[in-house]
Image 1: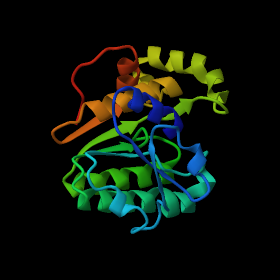
Image 2: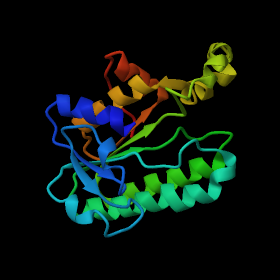
Image 3: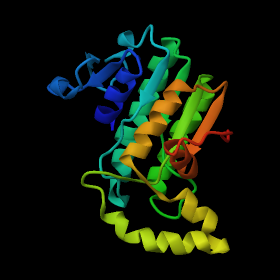
Length: 211
């Protein structure tokens, strides 16, 4: 997602510093300053955060699944703790965090870790934007398209309407537009971009955002 976001932010006139693992520097889009480091090590990149005003956290275990509960703790949780400490020490004013839709009936370990990370960010005192998609459709991630008729039925039924909208599908372009909007519209405290809001931003519809 970072590869798609960086060019959009650069087009908007933003200066970007992108964290890359050793050996992955060439994957950073041209125009961004590359910071080589380890997202799981506290002092790996903290010095490079100074002078920025917004921190975007997109790190997480690839292809989340119920069997990866330990990895959620070791990667998702740890990287967020390191990021919050580094951002706060650098005087970051706005922290953008890619979270997950919640509550949810499945993937409880994943949701729990993301909720804990949100709590850490809130406690830091930084203004924050939490994006809460459920499943992002994109290259290699299109099988849920078969569920679209099911979602339509659930959205039509009053008893399942709220849950089906909260746990709805969004596309990668929709997520990227929402992330750009989040970077360019920092809140005074905290704002949440859930699935309906992410879709609305993609369609150019704005309005109040729940805290």
